[in-house]
Length: 146
Image: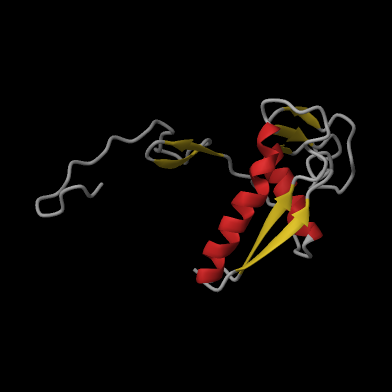
């Protein structure tokens, strides 16, 4: 698909910042990254680790650290522009900036929900629904194909 580099945020200081149910598995990071690096190498893709410290606190829209930008787990609101963005997407945009990529402000930030049958838009297009689709029956001669 044309991917030649992957950037992953390194959770610097996460284990020291009052561990909780969301970050206690930080010790598996090295093992997962090693495995990911080996798989990517098989496809000729380079793996880069970027220090992610502070990326979830900094606004990827206006580049300012807003004291109360992250209003809840999963939501970041820029008080300057009023743009609402998923907190993980905000951090990913900041990681991309640290890696040297431009991250233009999108005119519309799309949100998605992961279902057992794939990814669905949280804000559906006209005529579409966010409900989990029914699995299509297997076609004759193609048993097991969904």
